[in-house]
Image 1 (tube, rainbow, N blue to C red):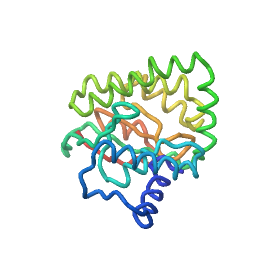
Image 2: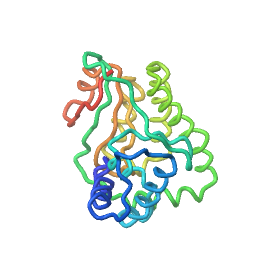
Image 3: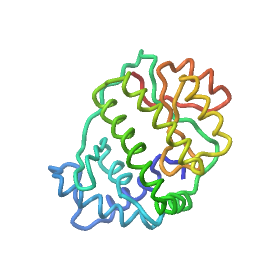
Image 4: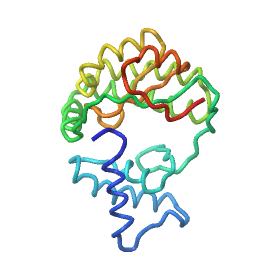
Length: 218
């Protein structure tokens, strides 16, 4: 896969076309309905990956941003309006190679058997991810980039097998220069890498020779 939810989109399309007693996007989507959809999509997408949360297909099906407060508390949300003239940007960086999701999931599940890794996941990865989401939704750019730097560092230190080898130095360069910060898309291993920058011109210059597509400006 490419890390942007292609299997999720396929699962959502199959459900939309063939599901009996279908929950439609036009009805009042209560938390119970969202969780029911998530459970169905998780079982369907597990066919591709061996294990799935169901969130990617749910996101594709609803065409709405999903906020995950906890395992049993999810809701649709909205993101701040873009500033098309802003220098800040979220972008996709094309690694030029396809990643296989199932082996990456397997690596992650093996790592989860290690207590030290579980501690890092809880105390660093989840902590900074949650802070990034809160900062982004509230428009707190300064705090967002502080947390993004920490998150990018945690991924480089503890999720290296999921980062394509030729991007290890580029990943590190972004953290050291503060020109951009990179984050895995999906399970990693290839496909797209998500990038954040406060100055898109600087980021483009630093990432010259790589295919880069801006998806959001602020």
